Amino acid sequence: MERYRLYIDATQCEPASGEWFTSDNPFTGEPWAQVARGGAPDVERAVQAAQRAFTTGAWPALSASARGLLLHRLGDRLAEEAECLASIEVRDNGKLYSEMHAQLGYLPQWFRYYGGLADKIQGSVIPLDKKGYFNYTRHEPLGEVAIITPWNSPLMLLAWKLAPALAAGCTVVIKPSEFTSASTLAFARLFKEVGFPPGVVNVVTGFGNEVGAPLVSHPLVRKITFTGANATGRRINEQAARDFKHVSLELGGKSPNIVFADANLDDAVNGAVAGIFAATGQTCIAGSRLLVQDSIHDAFVHRVVQLAESARMGDPMQKDTQIGPITTRPQYDKVLSYIDIAREEGATLELGGKAAVRRECGNGWFIEPTIFTGVRNSMRIAQEEVFGPVLSVIRFRDEDEAVEIANDVRFGLGAGVWTSDIGRAFRMAERIQSGTVWVNTYRAVSYMSPFGGYKDSGLGRENGIEAINDFFQTKSVWINTGAPTGNPFVIR
Image (cartoon, rainbow, N blue to C red; front, side, top):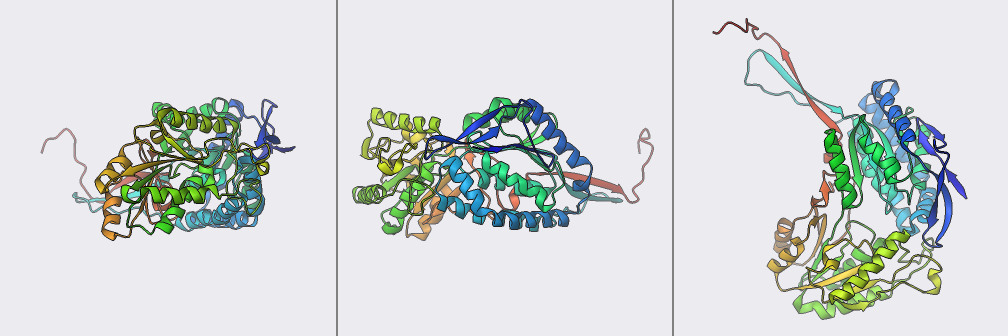
């Protein structure tokens, strides 16, 4: 088996404990790699390295333009390694190679975009109401940043955080999911190659209580940026508040994908199926609630079922595979339990509803594409994030009811609207409580456009110019250019 070591202070190193854990291949169900089991001593080493890099040495001495050039070099090097890193991610998380290769091919743009943005962040000169003073602002990097990433798209979600953090001048310690650590450790080797100073980027792998907890609570960490489950995000936010750390959280979703009768139904069928079954439903923006207008409900659902049941399952490395396995065994068990819950609540099973036992699925953790109709929005299957290939179909009468159902969840990450009425498109985009609304498309993202959630879906924004501002703090500088400084004890 391959062995992946920690990356601290530009060095691949053994964990202090001398212990390792295995990473399983979701397609075979078998271990394929050993990963260093880090702990509090390794976190301490990594944070100290990040702190040294932030305060002394080459990194703080670099101009913003020089930082940007390093990010451009990293993007170019990442493009060269896209195929290799995509293959590692497939072995680690079971997603389709076609999807991972496309993601890795696109990720260099994040580092190029923020590399170009690094030297374009400007302060302001404030036109004061006081004579004899000059006042201006500076945007200064926060300092040491903890980046905690999930298992579903490890490098993509890392890039969303890492690129703006480095462009701002911060240093980082990365804690990837224990289920999918290998690609992050392989990626980390590129930083030394392209010239990043030691300690700017560090990776400590391991389990939440052994690595995540000491990283979040470390007194030198000034910001935590996290993508993952709501329960973990809440704990991180509570811990961070004790030390007034900055926090960005990208959490769960229960996104409505809303189809009106006047939509282009061919496009809407494709969008509904891709919205939930792409990535095997393991994405925070999965369109897991399909809201269909009454007048087209039955015919539309029939078409969705037909398309979904035609999907080819199997080896995610094969080009013709369309649905891969569930990434982790605990998640596999969780998805199956939610299918049972939906049945118990009275939803009608239209497709799937069980583990896949197809020959092409081998011993992997596969679940058949599953569709329930007759779902009420109050059901757990419509309110709780399943994070798997399970679609809940809900009827609605008109715009008002569609908005009411769409907003009647504690999440607000993404939403889709399918309509040919441009006025309705604008009305729905305004009324839906969601960080992103897609009209006549679904799951489109860009390094240029902000992404984040309303309500329980998180705090802050990733991507776009807004993201880099989350890694700065603003300093106001006052200079007396001639205002008198009189005796403070003399009243005039």
